Amino acid sequence: MEKRYPVPPFNLETALQKVKAAEEAWNTKNPELVAQAYTPDTEWRNRTEFLHGRAEITAFLQRKWTKEFDYKLKKELWGFRENRMAVRFEYEWHDHDGQWYRSYGNELWEFDENGYMQKRFASINDLPINESERIL
Image (cartoon, rainbow, N blue to C red; front, side, top):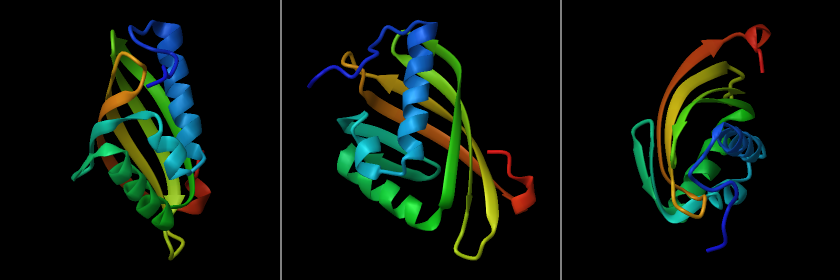
């Protein structure tokens, strides 16, 4: 596989670059594009779902973005070491009925030597909000 820069071991600058790249990719809401940042055999825990591989990730994201409208995400680096990162995030979206939510969470990331994410563990909580309370 080609290298996906920046690659580990990370320093502050390269860790921030990786987080920004992830934020930008997820905000495209393009499942195929997002999935390319992960190893072919990636392992995910997203809430209570356990996913393996790019095909499952792509299918998951396709389902996600058919239910979460006007999705907007912000990620923030909380820490890093060698090939691992801790990231805090929040995103806003609304459902078919127009109810807005702000979803908060934390992710633990582990990268392979080529800069692809091989593990992603996400814990997420949803808070119903009024449209007037949106901040993103």
